[in-house]
Image (cartoon, rainbow, N blue to C red; front, side, top):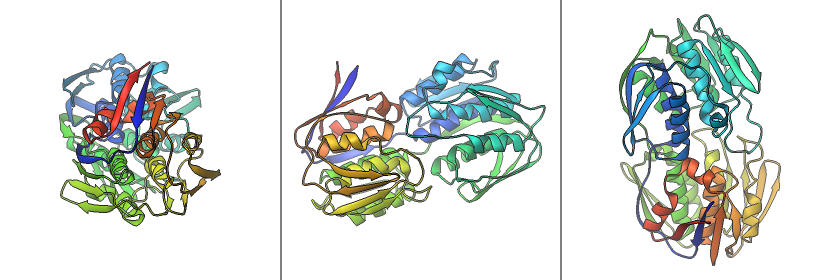
Length: 417
């Protein structure tokens, strides 16, 4: 077992380089199943979820190797299985992208219901709706079994804006016959990145990043090289940490446009934020003002940044209200913040935060990936020492988080128990 120990009270100063986007990588790597040839994928984050999806695909017959720490060579030409090992699939939510890719290439997929962070029911009904509209038969009883004689382009209207469904239907439709239109789609940066990857391999996708995506089916995709975008959520995590500690940090390798909702909220809370071409500088002013935050699909404030902003607002002046409009039960980490002295009351999808003068170090757990990031930020602000357990959640999406914070001057280290 491992834990992260943080001794708070130090300002963060210096530069941090952001890794490739987790949410893009876990969609693009399985998308390589659709490619007739070799893909070289650059700027791949060295995180647990990437290693899990690579392991699943290798088990299914793909040939994958790391050319260096951040570059993958993926060859799925020899893949001969349409079923993934259940124990591996249940380690990550994004394993359901295998369904769209396998259905698109083999017209058959059999994947266990995915795992990942536990913060409420996350049904895949919109994914299934899209697969069926394309001509597949889908059964879902513990396993998702999808098959089709052929996939034919169609029109799909998503009842809710769903990142996962948008991606999965895109994957299934790329090689389908004819044209597919998907309406009311999600617009997150990693959806645009996936579309750009597929187009670089020969797909014909238009409209990613807007409300409507149009796909003209092609006969095959060819191999090529593609570089993944920077991680929007990792960047936001370090931006909030800089403001929380009253520090001065240059966050490098970012796309400032992707960070606008986070930047705007940090300015409102009292930080100084300066956008550069591919970097953002965040400087804490020693004042943390109250704020109201509502998570929304992109370009709104990201749900994956909600625990981090709550940690920051726990020491703000006055009362803040944070509303979660994307997922149910995403405030499970709040009990851990309370152990540190936070005054937070949760009512359904709303958290009312009465700012306290300071947090106190305590023994806490990372209840999920982003909740774990919130605990680290809380530990950086707190008086005394904070021990964070269950850090396998953090490792799913952050590459050597404690080392990056240490380079900024934090007193943080990983301990093997």
